[in-house]
Length: 115
Image (tube, rainbow, N blue to C red):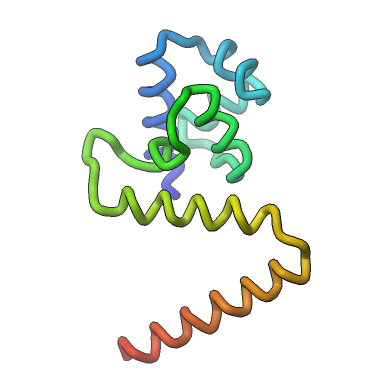
């Protein structure tokens, strides 16, 4: 995820709703300075924080991961990746290891088929 695209979209969504950084931070349960760092592109939040910010803005998390000014087919891909990260965060360590192994297997297969 590009921190600058996320930050630009976060700021756009916040301003569209007339929220200050403080109001968004309080609503999402994050620090105001974190909002400022996200919007400036100096930091990238974890998936759980993206979910809290999206909830506070009443948008799907994928909206914050997409450059709405230049909406592209990558939008659906970004939402899929976010959903996968959300699921992965809630897995037991053993199941997360299995998912990671499977993802590596699929990646290697894909590289071989392209090569």
